[in-house]
Amino acid sequence: MPGEVALIVGVGPGLGSALARRFARARMDIAVAARNVDKLMALCQELQALGLKARAYACDATDERAVLRLFDDVRRDLGAPRLVSFNAGAFMRAGVLDTPVADFERCWRVGCLGGFIVGREAARVMLQQGGGTIIFTGATASLRGGAMFQNLAVGKFGLRALAQSMARELQPRGIHVAHVIIDGQIKGDRPGYRAEQCGADALLEPDAIAETYYQLHAQPRSAWTLEVDLRPWVEKF
Image (cartoon, rainbow, N blue to C red; front, side):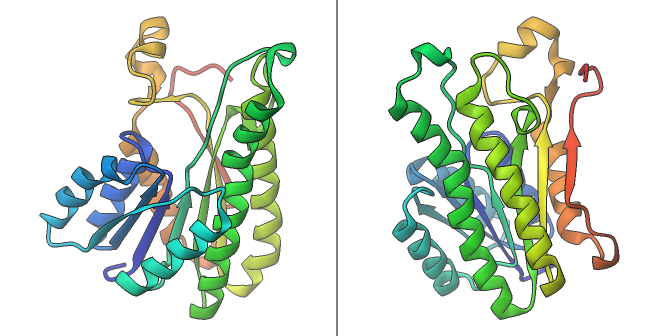
């Protein structure tokens, strides 16, 4: 896939950075986007040192104008993205009675509405170029809502429904839409939290997850995956 452009929306030190490095190993040009662009500069410099094109962009995925500007800027700087991964999310653990409407709405806007805006704009670009891959990052909460996890589950349920609807509409037009359920804590998200409880084997390695994302993009269209779930080998499910 040398020369293709990958856009990753929602990049932190864990999965987002691992995706950028994995796509870069395939000699793709990399665009990374987050609200705080300063945190992305070291990653871009790392990729540029390998002789690759890598650019960082500030973007609030819940702001339609900001997302439109993001896609315009990426196309101007690197070219039309052939692979778009949406990883943005927000979560505040709280009981139903203790959850302000503003907090609930913010989590939904980041985790679900942002996915719709980014996915829609990715589809528009990819239809113009005859195909591409859109990958949405889900979670255990995509399948079941836990106590005190409504702020996460509602957005993740909606994101999964979005992926299913988009796949059925866009797959016949050459766009591969996939939804990845991350059933567990990713190493680097909250350092030490789950490792202290269950041991290091209970954490998902970001690089291992990123390999699955790349393989989804590389799949032949005669056997596309809509949904895949990933979990550590010690995880109970």
